[in-house]
Amino acid sequence: MKKILILLAIFITFESCDEGFEELNVNPTKPTQLDASTKLTFIQLYTGGSSYVANLFWNVIHLMQNVQHLNDTSYVTFLYKEGNTHQLFEEQFAYTVKNIIDLETQLEASEESSAIADLAIARIQKVLIFSRLTDVYGDIPYSEAGKGYLEGLRFPKYDKQSDIYSDMLATLESSAATLSSSGPSSYGSADLLFAGDITKWRKFANSLMLRLAMRMVKVDNAGAQAWATKAINGGVMTSNEDIAFTQYENSANDGGPNVNPLTKSFTSRASTQIKISKTFMDFMKDRNDPRISVLCSTVDGNTDPALQFGQDINDPTRSTANSKPNINIFGGSGTIIYDAPYFFQTYAEVEFMLAEAAERWGLAGGNVEAHYNAGVTAAMEYLAMYGHGVNITSTQISDYLAANPFVANDALKMINEQYWVATFGNGIETFSNWKRSGYPVLVPANVANILTEGKIPRRFPYPGSEKLNNPDNVAAAIAQQGGDLLTTRMWWDVN
Image (cartoon, rainbow, N blue to C red; front, side, top):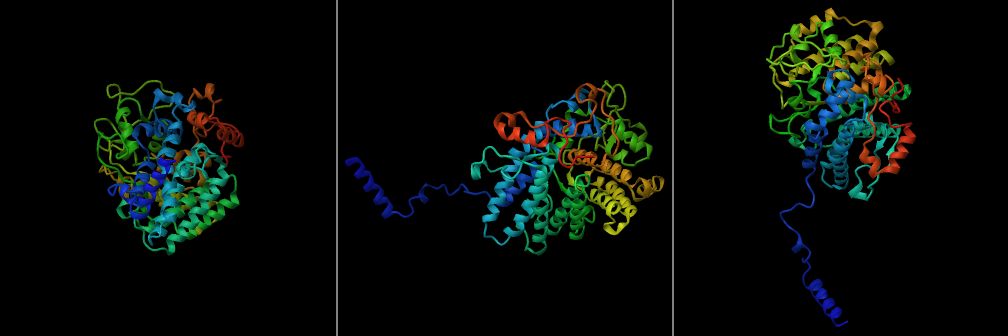
């Protein structure tokens, strides 16, 4: 008892005599909260991928081969097995999801005048992150995701994709409206996509809204039309100046995330295994497409289209520099461009979606051909942003459109085949739009006959780590989605 009284007296003494006692135990050089702009930079940098290794497996080896942009014969069976499909899920929830939720929470409590615009931008970035995840896996943690530290929700439930889409669309609508009337953002150059330009962020919000709306055409045509109308009326991208992309650094020895995770992937594999798909190359060659000389080159840097070829998905041989011309990607000079931009959404994609909206519902002025031609033009012009010095001229573009004119009776086919070419490198978007539209018509590899009943995969299975650490919620998600196979259809994938 005596000891307790002594301790109590000491406590009371310090409590009454030194109101700054707690402050003495705070390190003045260590911030209690990171600046919002610092968090946004980190999130945007990791949205493209934490490293080239992860991007190699989920994007290059899986998605870009699924849509037959690339072929890597040594990994062809990966397309029809789980392989490394867990990489995207684990990477994004660990690096971007939990941080974007933290940033959103911080800005909601902020009293800074710029927090209104900053929060709207953060929420658009949040939709970008979650839309990429749900379009690959289907039902995923959403409403409870990223709240392990903030709210103690360590085992988040999996939301239905239909509910996720509903909330993402509403978020984009409200964020775009906010940016139409808010003051400036404080992010500045810390914003890797648009340097705090709220006008471009508003256009991006509406362009993402249009993308999500078009996903829904087969499962909810009326809803798709309504949201597409809102997006178009709100103002979407109008030129290549509005493209959403991250510019990386030129550092060959950096494993990530400061170099482009896509082009870095080709460093270790392009010389012997990764090739342009024969399906993709034949499509371009049949149309005398000038993009061949931009996207491909031999190892010695020759971009002559006549020297380029594609690798058949069922060809078991590996092309090497010693046996036949080898394909490099984005080369133009036979080299890898580490500081190449990573594109999340382009103006070309928007024009193709406007063309389809005009074809389906008479939206966007109803001039399908004009939007189609604008999409082809933008898709060829924006490749100059790779910085390889091989640019496509206006004359080449005009000649291409003249030799391959738009055919109204084949509108949806032509629009979505061009979308397939225009999104080369963005495996998630190409994969998603192929599933939605059915174009181009692709043929699975022979090995699919024994692994997926001859079908091309439609999604990625949930990671084994989730099944181990969050088993009850994963089991519920599998039950509500109808399975956890590569061929399981998600909500909007009813083509």
